[in-house]
Image 1: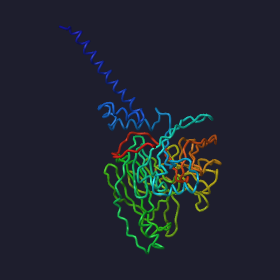
Image 2 (image 1 turned 60 degrees about the vertical axis):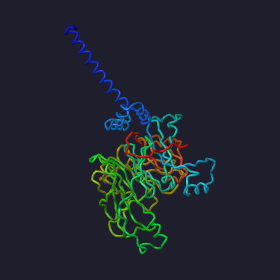
Image 3 (image 1 turned 180 degrees about the horizontal axis):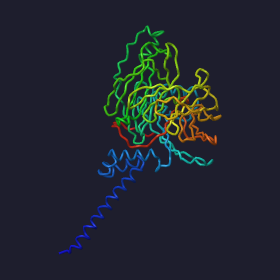
Image 4 (image 1 turned 90 degrees about the horizontal axis):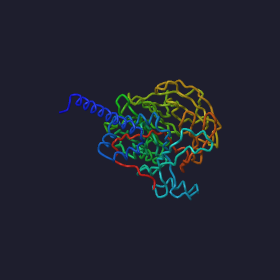
Length: 439
């Protein structure tokens, strides 16, 4: 019979082993949550317990938090939307235009390309980029590269639109999902609203729309917002603008209030999500027939639209174009000459105390001449990506004014190439389809 002393020592040993096992388990979770999605997907196949752990909401949230802090993964990921030729020997511009315009994918690929950038690109001879990881977009998103747009990125989920289709996808886990068709009742179209029958039938087929995607922190749900404006060619009709919201948890659309005179206007890099608000370039009409260029913001939690005035020194109609970007967590406005040139000046404005409602702009700086045509995004506080007229992507340092070319290009008109700073995550939204790697 064991002495009480031995029994106590045995119980103490078991208690310590239990604590050690518990600590080991906690440490395993800490290590796993720092791994990228590719590694976690492989671990899910090891055993049921690991699969259950990685799929748990707490694990997914921790993994996302680590990815956003970027403390454990040095590269910055950039996601590009671009079109490439299957046959690189084709160089004739007219033939390339015909390939872009035709309704098949025999000679072109519409891609989402994930590029990892080293956070240290100061060395002149250092290659800052990885080889792009290319994912082929599914039918019918891959038919018309000009209508396809990235309209928002949040927590690793990207929202894409193409004509009347809206798709959510997570490139890190290669998951995508088509949203249901809109239930918004469109107003009747009358031939009297249009100059001729061709315009009338064009308007029946498609309408200019603004789409945005983001996270409602109050309701803890992802949302897609869609604004519809009706036009004949470039002339807006008497039908008012309307809006609707898709809530991911409810899997349905509902109509919401919007000023009937609000119009979302598309220009390159003119839409962005930041801190619970989505932003577009837009127009309002303070008085009938008198249009005013503004930024339209949409609050995801309150489902309300707001109007933000532009800096007073920006005068439209004088060859000036603008892009929206995120700089150090604030909305940045980049103004530049619309005329295509090999280089141009960029004027950067920042909206202080960004909460989706402010009208206070600060002129950050003017830089250039920048070798490029259209600014895309800030991927670091001192590095802006610019796309050139021949479809190449350049990183321009605001301090040193040194530029580096990245291994990314597109055959479409350069204004249709898009980029977002991408956060790798394992968030799933129940997508029933898988994106495919380029063959």
